[in-house]
Length: 408
Image 1 (tube, rainbow, N blue to C red):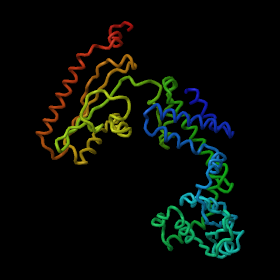
Image 2: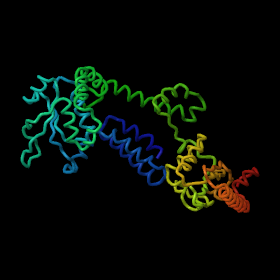
Image 3: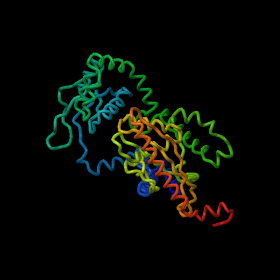
Image 4: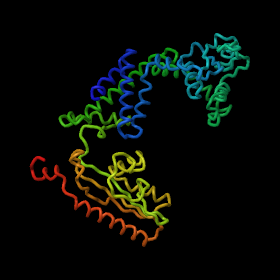
């Protein structure tokens, strides 16, 4: 796996069709393996989605041709100014925002009516085609052309996201916005060419886009290098990279996997008293149990709640979790207990008793004090019985041998 993690990203970035596919499918296989063997929540799915932009357009075109019948085509035709570098990009952006597929993009100079609208009103235009029998090609455009801001609203109206009409400006404001963009289209075209290239909105990005992507890749790589303990322990380079990383919110660390395992094995219990008198473990929703849970997020009511509890404890913000539960109006009192022991490995740790620590006790507003005190007395008795049973267990051989200074 380590070799795969080192080689696959390099292959995925090689400008060669086959090398990129091999690297990307290797990464896909890695994420699927993580999903099948580890309980890490949405991590594999997010990683898979992040790989989509790296797939070559040629491969995406092959997938699109596999089942062409499922692709919905549009009968809309958009006419743009041939000499406008910004116009074709704006058309593509509008189609993407509206979720329209299969629409036609044509130069206004190729159609007499569209050319007349462009010449007289300095505006782009949109129309619909008439069906050409059973053939999947468009016939001559229909005469009902829409132009300017009316064309934008017409495009949205005939898109799968027609609800966007509710947030679009009306005719007056829209026409003023369209006129302002038209006057500034030269500047927009220059900026678009720098960021997205000049090849009709497709192909390689522009110089600025390539520079930004290269800087982001270099910054993330530098942060990973300076964060690695073998490097960080020798030379403190983090202060040099941290400002740039923090500015773009790219700070990351990988303590979940490397470089060292957790030194202690921990789990939590959250006994809670409901307003109707019921007792329940608020993490799992099950009756209060002090038996160690199996690995995974089930004990915490799901992966997200597990991360919420652990992150809140690390940042000293666990009280916000209790305040949330109190605001629901369902609970009177909540306790949080932590059970921990040294992590000596699976075989050596299994017989070690857990140390019990109270992390906090919270009481919600407007509750019965006597009921809360009775609940806490029951919880203390339950924990005392648990500690008594733990003390009766024989000490683990690995820990006892380590404390005695001998090998097990």
